[in-house]
Image 1 (cartoon, rainbow, N blue to C red):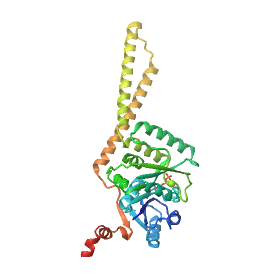
Image 2: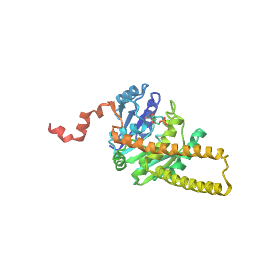
Image 3: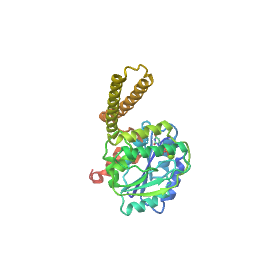
Image 4: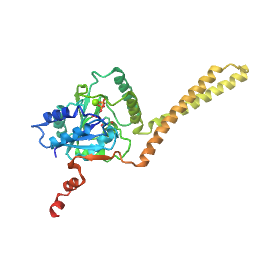
Length: 324
Ligand code: UDP
Ligand code: MG
């Protein structure tokens, strides 16, 4: 198969028909052999019903429905595992990732790249969100080893080699932006204009974005832990110098009882710093805890017939099927 498209969907009942039409329009006549895998991430609206309807209507459309909402990362992983194409495209269901761009991306991929990534500008985005993103990328540039780029999301086309590389990373906490950067391979970028959502609302609240950022910063290395050691040493040295100063001052000048402000500032400041680094430590501990459980990333509730176990078996071992 030439191309698989993986589309995570969470409460997208009003967008799927439009997505179907846009994908068909963008690919018909240009890509003959493709499949679209809709991953219903435990939607609470009629997304699953829509996915079933589209799959019945158009044989190129398949779906996998997860048993509950596992999050976009898990939904994408599920889609990547089910994809059979020699190239795999990842895109959102809300048409914020314009399917017309796919053609250009495929041409680039076929010219020898393993990843072609779409980079959007931040037109029309709320000021606080784009500022938050800038702060995040600035911090990420310093704190983690892999290079993340502003405006780069999950809209990308991957070669089979790159998909297999991503699938070989078993971690439970998946921060795709980082994983895709981590696998490396030759990567090309194409730019596009940020489009408003076709239907429904964004699933990201401000808090969710902040949490996502923290996940990203702590998913790739232990540099935040290192920083806490360095800062601890710095504070200890400063504290030592201050103690020396106080002792000398007391010997030379006698005891001055006032010092309330210094004391309070010291206690509050150090207390805050300790809590902060306890938090960093806890974050890593929590991550190890979840990794150690080795739970699956998602559970499947229902799939279209192409993904039933017998159908998969038949696909993988066609000769055995003939012999039996
Ligand atoms: N999504 C998902 N599971 C979730 C949240 C989102 O599969 O728990 C899907 C959603 O249906 C959409 C894509 O991920 O196709 C991007 O979500 P959204 O548009 O809400 O994010 P934004 O574009 O605001 O970053
Ligand atoms: Mg969106």
